[in-house]
Each structure stands twice: as C-alpha cells, then as structure tokens.
Length: 283
Image (cartoon, rainbow, N blue to C red; front, side, top):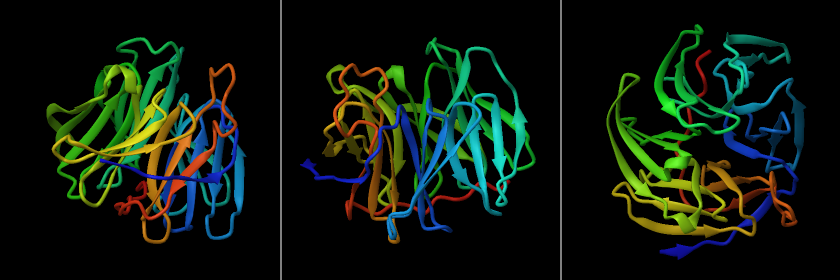
C-alpha cells in the first residue's frame, strides 16, 4: 500500500464541495458546492474558472450529449441548455429532502440520489432517469445516497449509502441490479465513505468524509493505495485531464468550527492512474 502526494488544483472555500466530473468535450472539470448552490468549472490547461449560482441546492452536475448540463437539484432533475436556458426534466419536490450524488450509466441514463436533510434512515432514494424524463426508483431504503459508479465493462455497479460505512457492489445488466454484496467496510476510525470513481483496472477510489483521505480498493476489495489530505471532509473524486490520468478530489468545510486553510478546495493527484471515459447524459 502506498501514500500518494497531492497538489491544490482550485483554492476555494466551498461549503460542501462535491461531484467532480470531467467534461471531455469541453476539456474542463465540473464540480459543485451543494449547500452554496453553485456549479463550478475549471480548465486545468488555462486556469480559467466559472461559477453559476443555482436557485436551490444542487447535488450533482453532468454533461449532456447534445451540449449543456443536467443537474440533480433539490426538487428534481433540471436541464441547462447550451444557450444557458433552464427547464425541468422531472420535478418532484419532497419536503425535507434534497438531491445528492449522481452518475451517468454506460447507457447514458442518469442515476440520481436523494437524502433527507436530517439524514433519516430510509428517507433517500436512488433513481434512474432517461432522456425522455421517465424515472424508475432503483433503491428506496437509503439514508445518504452517495458514490455510484460502474466497472469498465459495465457489468458491476458500485454504490455507497454513507451511514452504512460500506462500499457495496451489484451485478448490473440493462439498468437492472441484482446480487448486492459488500466490497469493503470502512472502519469507524477512518470516517464515512462518500463519493467514488472506478479506474480502468476496475479498482474503486473512495473519498472518506471525516477521514482526510481517498482510498483505492481492488476489485477483490483489498485496500492498496491511500491519498492523505490536509482537510478532514473529503467528499468525492474523479479522473480527468487529457489522458484521464489525474485524480481530482473535492472537499468541504461545513460544520467545522476552525476549518483548515484548504478546506473546501479541489485537490489533484497528477498521473496517479488511468480513468475510464464517462458517458454524457442522453437527454
């Protein structure tokens, strides 16, 4: 097991930085501040950054195949068109509930999670959305729906409901899940699993909330690499850059009485591995 050094990609003070996603078509990183209601972009080639405020808390942002962005918002799934216009794909407000992490499946569908603000068990869901706005609830007994990702061949789906402290794995075929089992359990002293990404070797990288680290687990569930960070609230990770070899890591500062100077920043570990190109939402 090795410990890997990091760099600061974006110095920021995001309240709840989350959801890094590489937008290959635009050559930029997308990320969000959930509680700050902001969508951020960062171009590592030029250093250019943009910020767009959303009208409500935003749990995730992903590129769309035809241009623009899809947003997992508090009250449902929204679409930003290339010209900046906004419209709802699916609106279903539930009092006390907000959006959280989301991922695009190999078939281009959006798998979007929710959670209650009070994190009550069973108050969240994981749902699958297609481009025509149809929705299917995939998991309906979730507390904090978090990291979701697929193996390189699409036959496995990895998933985190953070309070369980588990990284689970399902068999996946045609948008259906079966055979839920545990890949890894995060010990109490290491924090809670949050966001995840899967690399080209099928290894699962897991961000650790209250754990100040990102861990990599092999497909067999063996811990084989750790990235230690100078902030406690590590939220999510994703591969990006021209060769998908750089790991971007988001962090948060919410609830910290004396947040470290870099809490809420985006970190990067250059050349740490090889990511898998992520599909855009087909909607």
